Length: 341
Ligand SMILES: [Zn+2]
Image (cartoon, protein in one colour):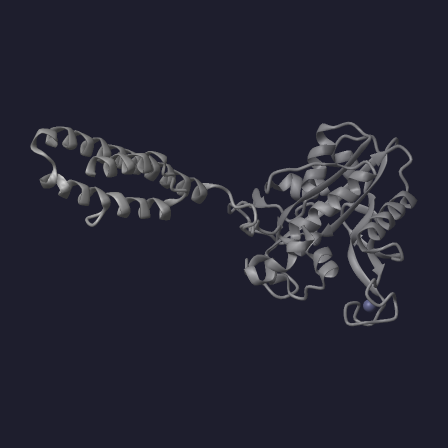
């Protein structure tokens, strides 16, 4: 009777197929538990006839091994399945947000200015920020005793004032004219320095984009058209330009450039101080003396030059009212330009 029962249980164990970890645990309790069937069958040993005890014992071992092996195998399988499902990718999970930084507003506008001028054939030229007297002043028609030097007081690196931080990127124009033959059509973006008291409107460091075009028959009309193209690309198609006579040592004639106020369209508003016009930079025809300094034949070639402060354009474009914000690295300010990238 116990042999029959044991053989039945063996078949049950062999055919049992728990489908998950929970069912497997039930299987373990049923056969291998402290109150399980095997325990019960082992306990029946005393009732077995002595000559069959050995046989019964062997059968019991077979049963136990079968139950244990099945339990071990399935346990390993279910554990592996659980781990696999944990490590697999859940494609329904929300994505991690990945924050990239923002470009500085001055960089955004510098790129835009370069891009606009590159569309009409200007290439980018760069030069050193530490300059000598020749490139920063003398070659630009500003000899030592010239009063215009006071307007561009900068930081000198030695007592003799031979070396200085450049006060304008016109230095790059000189370097290009000294080494390249016309036609020359360049823009020079870069950082410049002035010995100025820091305020909402002035800083000791700022950025310029200057432009230079030298070829035969370059006229003031070309300058006007170039500046009009820039103004309309930067501020909108309805913008007009205005030129007011001015003075720069390195251009003749010289002019200040205004654009019609793109905020009020000329009606008058706080941005244009109710004048309808806002100043964006200076320009003029390159003084023949400057061409001569760079050994370019001023009887054959003419050219125009212009210069704009990048901060000035950025302040107009984004209506920023304090120059100091550009240099304070306050993320609350910088984060506002995320979408402008
Ligand atoms: Zn206005």
